[in-house]
Image (tube, rainbow, N blue to C red; front, side, top):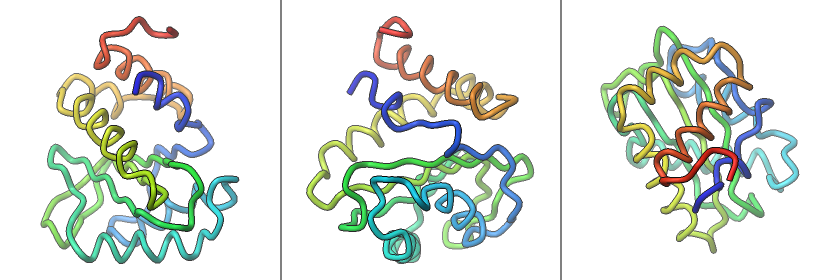
Length: 161
């Protein structure tokens, strides 16, 4: 799994200023960063499945983090977009306020890689220092660099290798 985030994270798909304070609007903002992504074959279908999955059960992990996701035929490879909200977004179905949202789309045939990715995100984000680093990143580029460094640390690797 080492280096997985480098394949998925793109500063163009990171927003550090989610405007909506309610979950559906925030999900639209973050998921919208994937519209036009070459591996998203049907954005409307993907977004619809993302919302359906969120209605089924909350994707909040605690610690002000949510990982909304959909296993769908509407993506050809795993895709990710990230959003940050300084005031927080209220997720009604879990009664939690979230500041970091990691939206994932996964092909239906690729459950193993999805589970590894979520495990990696959980290992990174369980650290209060890691969360503070991400919450303090000044730009999408700085956010991506911080995530890659945190991934290397969580994987026991040297950054850049």
